[in-house]
Length: 537
Image 1 (cartoon, rainbow, N blue to C red):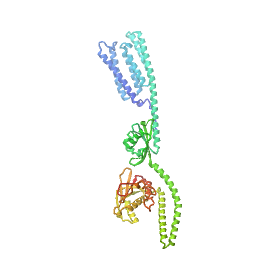
Image 2 (image 1 turned 180 degrees about the vertical axis):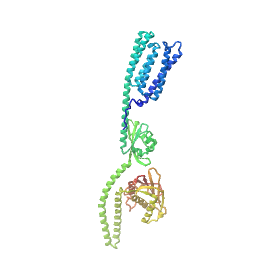
Image 3 (image 1 turned 45 degrees about the vertical axis):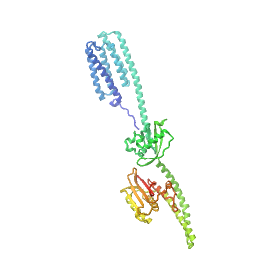
């Protein structure tokens, strides 16, 4: 948390810049007054308006006043000596020199004493009323003393003491009003500073709260500018590459789709939005807007729910249920299946030569093997989370895989056409990658035309957020459009001999290795793509 540290008034920086500017304007006022006095004195030398009782002294007082005002420009610019001393020094100069000029210009009747009201009011407001009452007392004493000397030296009227007294009352009234206003101003400044500190602390608390949230959170103002964003939002939207992590930028310049969603939400708060794929990592997020204040135009909080976390939680629940299922399968299915297979073998020995029984026994053997294969696939699916990630270089791995596949499946190596980008590596469990590619290639070979180059293996790299893309395609008839949506569903198959778990298990194994398996329609044959994300091994 940031804290406000008290600054000693003895330091030049104790006063804000606004106070020094105000003092500068007060000194500029003094320069203008002194200049007007000098111009008036020079223009009316025959019948002077000011200084008529002693023009020489008035000129000296006026020039000293201008010189000191000019010198104050330098001291204010240097901010030395400290602020309070400069204010007191300038007011004392005004009191002394204006009263002296007043004394040689006809006394209180000249009206020059009224200029001290401006000086006292300025002093009270600038210095927050600390010494203004004392300065009013000094000004009153100076005016009365000057008038006393005027009565003695220049024969001024004794009745003018009443006017001098009223001028003193005006000084104290001005000083007292300035003192009250200064106190209120100071109280308001302290309250504003406290509110500003509270707002700053509240903003920091809000930042700490949203930083601790698992979803991405972005605070937007009424015009759609980003005001705050937590680490998750910065990472998902790639805001770290932008100045100040995108703070101050319009949301539309980061993700235009989110800006469109914001406009739609402002029109209808009940709007629901489809998940968006954002950022270089191609993260899938569900946007949700929360109004700030009573009206939606005042601002909003954008929550980006990372659907990958939801999917991970669903996967954990699915794995837990699958673990219980496979434990029952191993006991309740495989043991009776072994007994059936063993009994069929005994019957086969006793029914040698009987074609009808031989055909029926062959049906039993075929279906027991199919059920055993199905159980094996389900048990393998339960082990998908036990992956051992390693860095695999595809330009050396895939030729070895093709050689092993051709030997095991008894096919010619010429059926494969390899196009692998050099030095591309992925982070994957080797056995899982081998099982996925084996399943895709076996399906492709079964539905291909069995010609050289019928199976294509291609590896591309350079996509944002992806380490590589592995394409597996064939020259067969492809997948019927009605079956594309059901292609990765468990137990979906178009063949009598299939279990319907091959593609489902392949996709599950890819997701267990931070990858994805998709089918790309539109080609002449089947085309599958494995997106391998950039992850650490």
